[in-house]
Image (tube, rainbow, N blue to C red; front, side, top):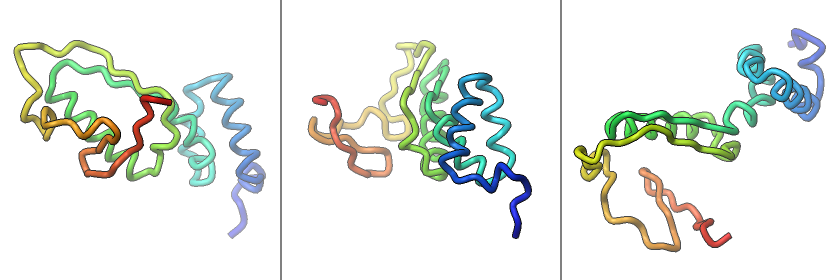
Length: 127
């Protein structure tokens, strides 16, 4: 099947450079270009997931949002593109987190961290 445009015929590295320029010039356009085709989405992925923000109001919303974010990043293979992760808002101290979706359990040993699925991640705190 022939590419539908001359841009899709470019090497992936060139599409990534174009996406970098689009991201720098007009950030909202990177979301639009990612919808054009699979090759555009692959090229834009590093910009789509570079900075993530969660605005939370309560512990249930926080747990739901983190679980959805984890599932989405896992499904799209985009964990490696996340550079900034911001959580804003305030949690009420009258609603403890203990017991909600496994949060509040005994933390893993200091030299390793685990996700909710048990995958071990390296400890970057000393780096």
